[in-house]
Amino acid sequence: MAQEPLLWGGLKPGTKLGPLAPIFPRAPKELIQTMIEMEQNTKPDEPAGLPQVNIEVDNPAQNHTEFGESPISSVSATPALNPIAETVHPITETPAIPHTPEIHIDDFVKVDLRVARIVIAERIPKADKLLRLEVDLGYEMRQILSGIAEWYTPEELIGRTIVVIANLAPRKMRGLISHGMLLAASHGDEGKPILATFAEDIALGSRLR
Image 1: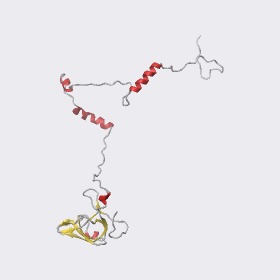
Image 2: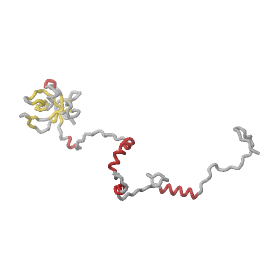
Image 3: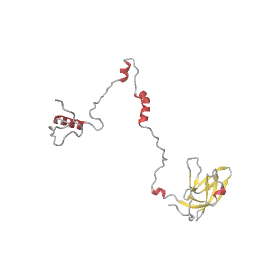
Image 4: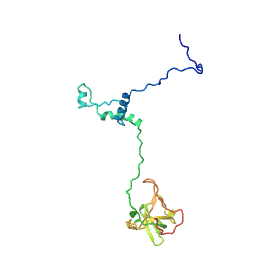
């Protein structure tokens, strides 16, 4: 007699159940031990269960030419693989970082940076780039030649408070002595030099530390 299919909610309360059995049979102990040993012997960078294939070729060029084929080298194959490699791992350019030699604090303290004010500014005959400046350091007047004539007129410099290197050795330029150097910043080699100055009043001759 065929058993009628059991519908949802058709099992009456008190119905006796048949013998219980596990849904998934237990694996044999021998198989479990074999799987543990395989896992322990597998290297971290090698997927488990995949065979390793080692191909050794004594002379690739000779093997190919024997069958009338041209030898294949890694040099000729690399360009064809480059588009795929670049797609997977795109090459990004690292922005260039200006390289300057490292100095110690003892080197820095040797540079005497002082606050000064430009009191005289004038062009030098037959010198298109140089201006002759006279600056007041508070304790003395200095003559400084600066190559900023392309960007500044003498009139707009007079009265400016700037930073100068006060202990720079004097040098002769265009027959004139330049004793010191003013500080300026520029973007790139051809950018306009912006003079280092102060947003607040400060006494002339004050040292930058």
